[in-house]
Image 1 (cartoon, rainbow, N blue to C red):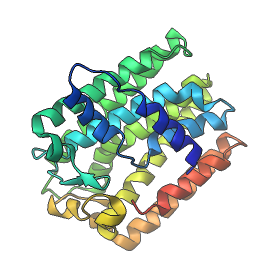
Image 2: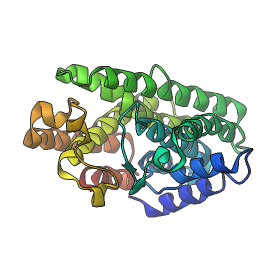
Image 3: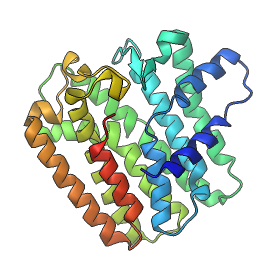
Length: 286
């Protein structure tokens, strides 16, 4: 993964919260937002911009907004009423440190503030910002990530079909990842044909990411992943591994990876960094 983009997004995120009405709320939001993490989503957006010859700086506010939304979702996912996790990114989960009420408000703050900082970008036109806000809100809301999370909760202790499971993951995980590609396309002013290709590529990469996550939940460790492995089994969730078996899940992951690489090469002659990022997604240990 392109480390310079990771450093760039980390520096940007570090300067978002400097003054708030509550120091405790500020610390709670920063605790999760600045805890590290892979930053795959913002890096995907910035790397897509690179494919079109655009500067990373032009996509920083959108990339940060998506990462803020992702961080809020992790805070809420970890709550006792949801997945009830103790560790995230190698440290205690937000509610374990700040309490449930503050953790809920920190998630609310990150979600809402993501649009505030996006709209404050002086380098994007008003039309571009409206298009980005619509894409991101659709991906994050009841028709996207939140809806997928609801389907995921409803499916616990149920054995899903492959199609049902893919519907859950398409929205819970995939929509926000797919939107990284679409946002980059909007910023780079791509035509309808290119946007359709980016939509397809983003969907494939979202699937790729989820299959790898399911594999890591079986093969990973707390030291490597920064959270407890095996949570899917504890919560009786249907995953690519439980449904297909580990060898077949790995085979499907490799197939989706290869399809994604072909899509990149079909889209641009400047896709080296994106292919490296796809390679990282399937070889990561956390």
